Amino acid sequence: MVGIGYDLHRLVDGRPLFLGGVRIDFDKGLSGHSDGDVLIHAICDALLGAANLGDIGMHFPPDDERYKNISSLFFLKKVKSFLEKSGFIAKNIDAVVIAEKPKILPYKDKIQKTIATILQIPDNSVSIKGKTNEGIGPIGEGQAIAAWAICELTPLYASP
Image (cartoon, rainbow, N blue to C red; front, side, top):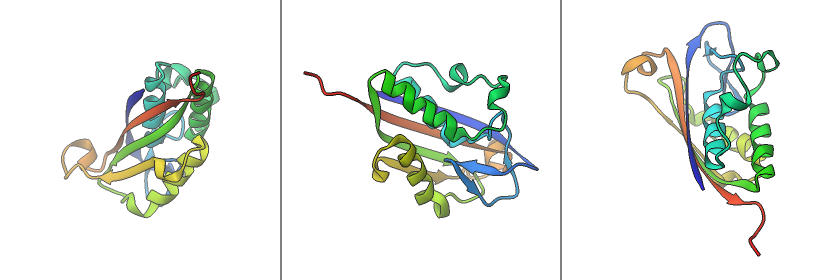
């Protein structure tokens, strides 16, 4: 089973930037009800979609005060639990962060390890890439960051 996820948030002053659960050294952060981590949000949507379990907004509504400023890693942990209850685990995740700045490469290994650790899968089962938007549109103008993710699930238990 495979799923795809996407998210985009505006960059704003006065917030820390989190991508893949890792704090990134940058002068702006992502707007959002939670910490705005577009990468984790896209991965959660990909995982939920692959298992036909809805989307992140359905499980964690953006108007629910319990999730205000919460780390998006909380969402990923809960999504892992939802998958397990449905008889699945993540097998592979491939994701792209689209941002003019900051560069993702210096954080790539830490992001991959953070995600793999939470999902309890090998580090090499998580691939993170950074791309720019070549100066085009809100992302290219440095006003936003987006992420795409695709995942593959595998059954938690082998069929008899």
